[in-house]
Image (cartoon, rainbow, N blue to C red; front, side, top):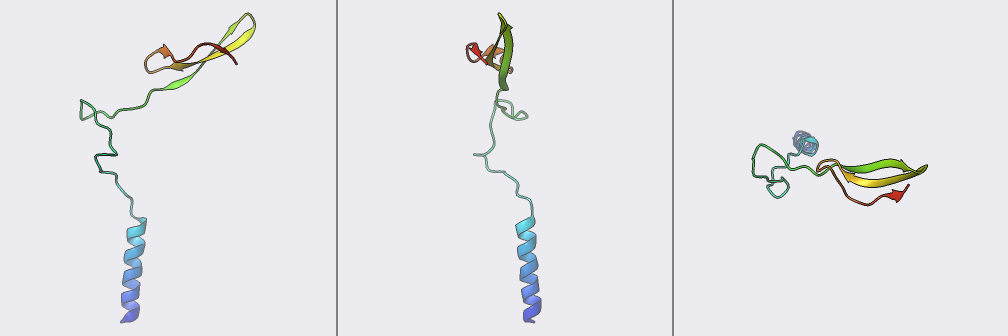
Length: 74
């Protein structure tokens, strides 16, 4: 009897610990005006160019198509 109870409790603990968790808390999910879309962060990466045989770089926001910083020597 004790072995069966111990085995049942062990299996319940293992199944509970390995089941996937689903985030349904509203504070975790981003909200937007359209409920079918999720808000995403901007894509920001470096742009490179060469002026007078010197390599320059700047941060560029590819989502908004705007530079984020000034040109600096790379």
